[in-house]
Length: 197
Image 1 (cartoon, rainbow, N blue to C red):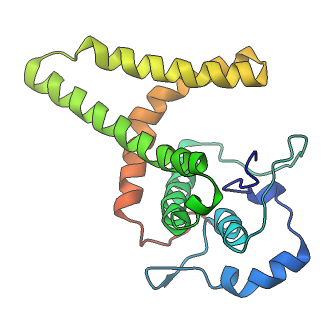
Image 2 (cartoon, one colour; image 1 turned 60 degrees about the vertical axis):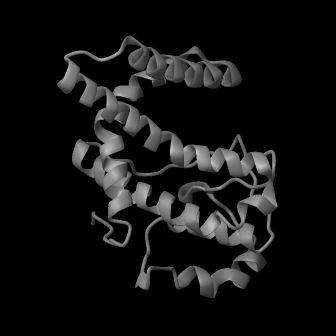
Image 3 (cartoon, one colour; image 1 turned 90 degrees about the horizontal axis):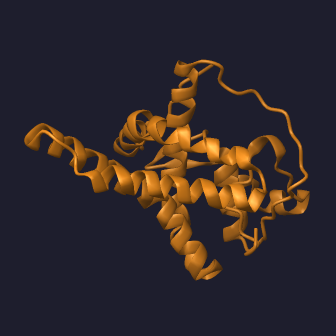
């Protein structure tokens, strides 16, 4: 928001000027990836199109919206797979755009995509060390815990709410459930199935 370039205006609470949308409607309705129609991740895709056209995207902290969320593991994992594919696809689309917006923003978006991949590699290296050597180096676990606590502490301080420290519980879910899912998403980017009704 600081750079007028929120990278994904979430579908349930995004608003656009009619004149801006009218300019991009043809591109928006004809979303393709590797020659195949793609209709998921439309909120992120539209946001990137707006930024490429020179419009600003803003964050409104007091916006409130209602949406439907998964209430069991299967639908949640299908949603996360769809989102991961969308994020990877539109990051590729945005790479040429990012340097025009801001250097920090470029670094942040690349970091958001490389961070999970580096965490996955670290986890695989620790697993290989466990299988081969019978133990995991203490610094591997300490690094993951430190990274988690720094991120959660920054969020807690910025929001001035201690409850954000609870987000650290997401790290094991991320490592053991979502990282393999993201790796699968990266290997199956051409799949455009919605995965739900």
